[in-house]
Image 1 (cartoon, rainbow, N blue to C red):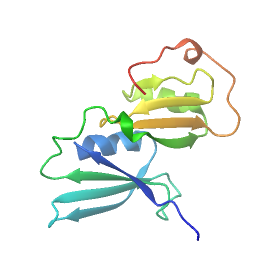
Image 2: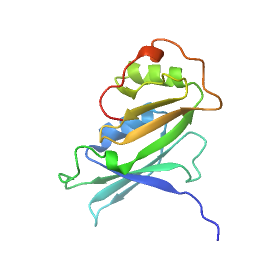
Image 3: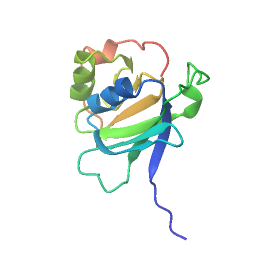
Image 4: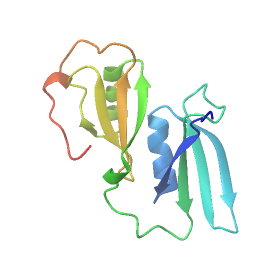
Length: 144
């Protein structure tokens, strides 16, 4: 029986701040649903060119708040994306105020966290890039 990946859903406390973070990663808003009866909004984001509904991140925002969301959602696991150049992506994110929690010291992998503490893994597409500074000697920051 075939199975097809659809999306990953994460609950967010501040929809605008969360959308801004995922757009910094290069995702685009593909679809938005405001559900009056259920008092929530769903926003689907995806990488450019993937707007067929695959590889979506679904942000779920409850209009009446989500005060019971844990402050550290590390138990969720992580989202993962490949990037063309791990160093350029991390520099771009840093320039936009995003903390690189696990720098790409190995030229292969980095982690950042969303405003809702969702871990996002960034992986170099193909082979790892040669190690380079400042990344090779950069320490971890916080949890990833």
